[in-house]
Image (tube, rainbow, N blue to C red):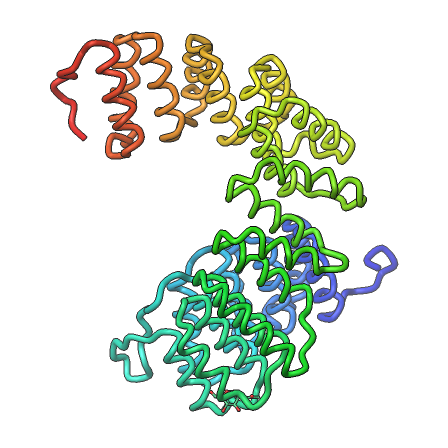
Length: 449
Ligand SMILES: *[C@@H]1O[C@H](CO)[C@@H](O)[C@H](O)[C@H]1NC(C)=O
């Protein structure tokens, strides 16, 4: 368009910006921003909101804030984008500030209300400080937003009611949720699903079951999410059998459901079943994702199933997942648990860019195979990159214990203190163990947990 001599309009810019946001291409978005400035359109509300949305989607919160502040005026779209961006960036308090500001300006709408309710559900914080219009500090939480919903007359909106329901359920206020649910003139499958998920989260499998039956008797057909929530409710209560029943009643379980039952198996130590179900999955030609692989790999590792691990490795190669960090750590775990440390090293070396989980898996693998000297050398490499975590320290201290190497143990101890891990219970236990094994029961003078 540009080459043909057409100048972009605000609509052009908004479309391109939305594409940049969708792709997460912040560089391209910045270029577009430059064009907007050159054309004097960056302060146009329509383009400004598109810029804001783009930066939020690209997780460039500082840029988003700058755009927001520069806008000559902001509307509910600008505020809501900004609020969502702040939540994405874990700035929960600032997001609530934003909502408070919206309230003060008087531009709250359905979208912003359900968005702020989403924030309440997401944040574990039950109460947060929000100033009311009189600049007086006032404690306000989800319940008060409920009050606001009523005050502003948004009760007729089913979507808002569902957001409220979700907020109560996520916080575990099932009585409030039940009360609201019963007073709702109109409910949807979403409302039932929220209730089922809420009871599941509270380990109330029976209540969740009851809810699903009530749902059916009211003429609502459970959907995929109902089943997934129900499955989660059963598995959370440790009732794998009931979970399997639900799973088997699904005609075409989605990948999420497969992963849910797999993870239930693995968490309840049904490792054999997990591996068998994975085979069935392959038999039914369901394409696994990284979560599936990670779960099954951990089950193989627990059982020391080298063959299973190898099969999954082959499936991974086929699915082109083999450099995915999430599953690589699992593979390293299986191979080292089965004593095949060379294979584990090979996999570690194949990864172009390691994350700390990968490093720790490799370190643990070396330690597990009593390659304590190698583990210490490996730990040195980690130190050079400034990586070690409490898990790494614990592992390497165990290696020092096995080697009864007081000198190295002491060196690690000073690193522990220097890097502020001395208060960690696991590290502390490993330290005590190390000093005992190395025959220095008193420990150095500086030793204190
Ligand atoms: C939403 O919930 C309120 C109770 O807070 C209720 O009075 C209203 O009828 C519900 N709206 C719908 C659409 O069901």
